[in-house]
Image (tube, rainbow, N blue to C red; front, side, top):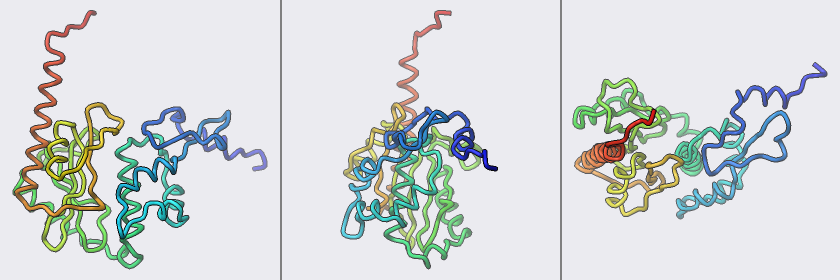
Length: 253
């Protein structure tokens, strides 16, 4: 084992993905990168700039970033960050910071009863007629659900990377809007509804998102239906835009 080169082994195990960076938060780690391959890390200042927008009396992004048991553990266990999209990495950072400030050891060990979460999801499926699933990371006494307006309940590929969707929490029988991601034409009216600015820096053309997970907004069932309609109409508008763009186009070959 004296000739075993750990860095070479790790580099070869990256399956030739070293030179692909899919998001704006990741930079090349010059100290670790060498002739065997490139290694990456999250730029903490960029992460802080993003997370600081959620600062309030209970949340301090800088404190989270500077804590080895907060940001330090998050970085330690996160793999292949360069392969994640902006939205995926933002979701991960935001979720970790939320858990850091609002979850203690006891609450993390008190998982939501899966049958309760599934029952809440089924209620919305029956009313909306679209796919709704419980968040697999539900914990504590708050149920989180993901709604996919463009998919029927029996669709197999409802959660593909291109799928539109939005997240809500259920607390004491009331709905709280958390986040949404999809086509710009879908997200803009939702952002206007809540008085926030969409994030267009998603790394995917024509896509945007909004994030209120640390400042959730109470909504009623009528508003849930409205958001579904906004996203379904956004898909129709985007499909028409693409059809108009390619209308009359012919392959020169």
